[in-house]
Length: 387
Image 1 (cartoon, one colour):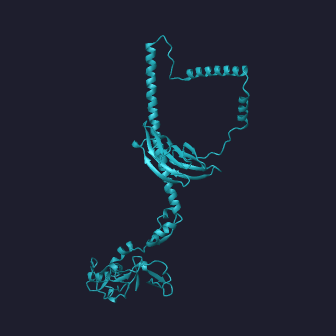
Image 2 (tube, rainbow, N blue to C red):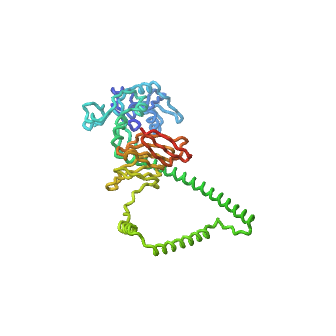
Image 3 (tube, rainbow, N blue to C red):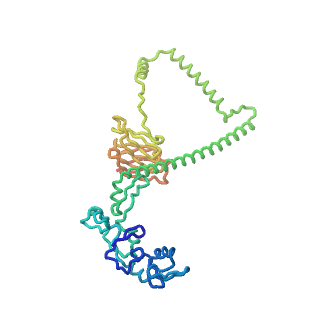
């Protein structure tokens, strides 16, 4: 026997006794109440009947306006103990037009289903945790409308076409957060420089005032206004240029010098398409196969020397300040966070990573045999074995 309750289908394991069926809705009792005459109805069915006539629907015994029926605890207990199939283990049979238990012989046997038999009172608790409950994909916010059984959810997630979009969004968020952190750090640096400049300007003003007071007979140049000084230097540079021109005209140039000038004119530098990062490029290196560029956004890009096409990226996680290449294959990246990482650029695989004491910026690197020396902003040089 199946019935509709709480907008969900119930399929009972055994036929329900007539004593547990409401005489009004002909369904299993739902919140049964008993009148003074002894008849029992569903609570909702009773209130609907009382709206028309204040009497028992069966024996016509009158009910007062303020009459409140009692809960039939015995009938309610018997109903709660009725056994039902989990709703995730039943299916609709279009032939018999009835709900039935899903079996291995069913047309839906390919779909995982629940085989549990549970008391009616445990229905909600079981269905909330049933491994065969129907759930939606976790990428539904990105547009996936697929609904699957909970036991199939991991398999669906591994094949969901929106997985790539989710990974892209996460990577984008990480890069945005990294850029925001770098922008904040640069803003702090700019603020410090502005404060230092203001302090320096104040100091220079005090120096000029002091010199003017101590040596009033001498002309003290206004070092706060560099234009006169620059103008004087420009005049001196012009005089040097004129003298140089005269010297070139007075003495003949060597033939080799003319030849070099000719070569420069005939072979100007060729301008290639720029290879760009998301931020400023800090350092360059070159192997037999790749041009390597490091950026303050924490990435190191590899460019194929044959066609200058992008061949891969190395994520260092912090501003890459310096690159050092050994044996045209092993790349050492020095970062602003004090991280020294070693990469195999042919395999694009990180081999090792270490941290400079005090997490200070790595400024430069040099190696001899199997020893790497790295300098930092703390005015110290650190030595590492690279074997």
